[in-house]
Image 1 (spheres, rainbow, N blue to C red):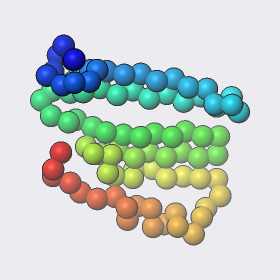
Image 2 (cartoon, helix red, strand yellow):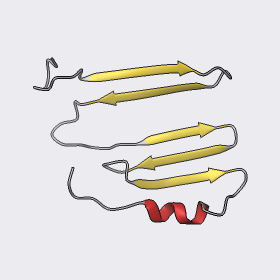
Image 3 (tube, rainbow, N blue to C red):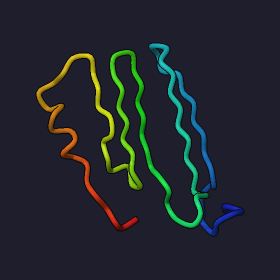
Image 4 (cartoon, one colour):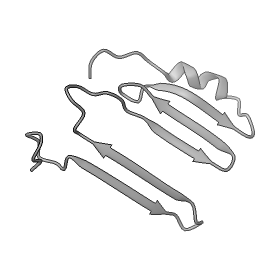
Length: 86
């Protein structure tokens, strides 16, 4: 049980990983934002791409860049949406 919040999970988690091809990745998660959700984000940084999905519910595509454009790239920002229920 968490010692800071009355929830049945850990307060904070950190994950570091090295994939078979040598790429590195990390993830940080916390349930300790007070008094409400402050932010959710996913950031992917690659040799030939960068992606940043942010917003209070990770619902806003803020950056989508790849070295070779795809047909669907211009539609990606349409996937962002507003939310008031978190």
